[in-house]
Image (cartoon, rainbow, N blue to C red; front, side):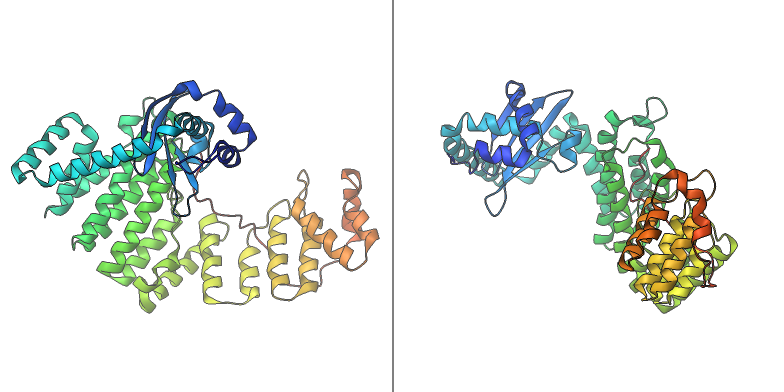
Length: 431
């Protein structure tokens, strides 16, 4: 039976899955501070910690659940959400009355606030600030962002990103990462406020410092849930927004971007150079290209240099041979880079050369390394298409047969450059 709330026990089981639903049954007695509002339901569930849960219906009438436990933070409808949903269903008959009462309380509060004088509202806010440290810090930052002294805003933003108050042993542990993430997120809000208040040029400079500050300490944070990575992404987005508004010098911006992207300490947030295309213009992009090419030539095996060079070539629409030349500068010992090259060539319609590079990868796998599984699969699939079943057996009979493989594979006819192992850039580093 579906009640006035719009969901049933069947819906909870479907959203959570059988395992989480069954586990949620055991947490029903752990639900406390249940509050049924006119738009959402909130509660606390005592588990290994006290977890805050919120349930709400979406525009289509479906049920959404949020919980600050690790599983819930990943977007899952967890056992704690199940427990709260079951607790609400246990009081289903009173839901309409409680919702109506909540709406009445909200209207009463709105009416009362609107009837207060300015002095009374200021006194009320000050009273709350005396008891709520987090609210006080947020409003202090808003006030600083609305003022004229950028130095104060800068110092306040950098203090929000300071991990020392949360690093009890020189490292921000998982248990403290959520609190740090909530504090650090205020830095993003402040940067956007600077831009909105007509001080985008200041926001550009402060955002750069904020990104660098977080990059220096990110490796010392247990960001298993990705919350700090989300803050870093927010800082990067705030920087781009400020640049689009302030339009700083294009060449200098290109120099900062390339320098930032080449710094191995700056992997907390992904910044795509070409998201700044509008900001850089032709002059800035030309400067960025020159810097990337020079960096790659100086260090062709550097991970960041290779990544940027490949990104540059693809954005410019350069041919596959240019990409192969970048890849070949650093061949992986297990043949993975050969596979990258083979796929690029196959995408370009050069099937024969693609297979030759893949076969070369199998031959050139360094002693002590197993060949990349995807490389083996790539070669076998192409052999099967060509009805070369005996060659499939030669490639995939087991470890004992592999030493004879080099003698069976033909020498490559393609005289192109060596490949590289680009890999994939991580969005968030997990310590």
